Length: 356
Image (cartoon, rainbow, N blue to C red; front, side):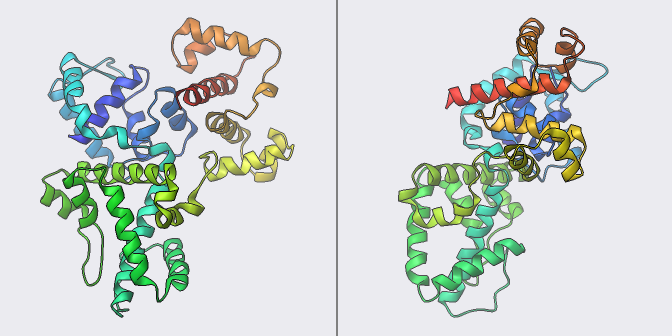
């Protein structure tokens, strides 16, 4: 039910301006500026990268199911563009409050959320087994950076397992009080301890009578919500804060865009950055749009000549859409798609700041 609600909400937000494939790329967390910009333009940031395991055939089956149930209807014979029907809107209005979509924060946590849960899972497994002097366990997390982090933590925590485990229990108990009993059960049943391995997503789905998709999304939503709680009140979760400390990101940029940003701050221009990094100029354009989306303090003035920003804004207002092609048709031919995308990015970054 959660995955269906997620698709219906996303289709509704797109307003018939993007194909349903854009939702698939969004949920998978595709690292393209188009997908990131769509997340901002259509206020779909919470759903970015929240279901990386989603298979395209599986996704298409869900869309077909929604169509068969008459919750969505096609807007084009040539492209997979949909809108919600009255029945679909009614379903969403009735069930959305209980789906937990408001707990998702994908654009912010789609990468660090996985690292946080991997660290927490492996740390609990390591400390509970060490506490019992059992060192022959098989790590449930097969990830080099996570294993290195846990080893570093364990070296400092050796001989203090009892106190750390007690603190971890109290902090997790505090965090889980904000969820239902079933949600707390799903999270704790996933954890591995001394001679006890946590349940797989499939086993959890069977136990709690959920679909595989909904179980995965429920765990993701809980992780994002817990990370929000920790970051908003670090004093209450000193141990959990340690798990997040080096995962902080000032702007939420991709690694490549962040590298470009550092070079821009050193005074290099677009052509110089492209040459140094052996990337196409259009790739650097993508990075600049991403920077403008994430950091409202980044100045975009140098990318426009006199009057171009005002011309693009007027065209956007006249078009009443964020479709680049329609906006481009209303501006001077010298105005580039890059400039249009950049101004849309700035508009959305300022809107997000005003909402916070």
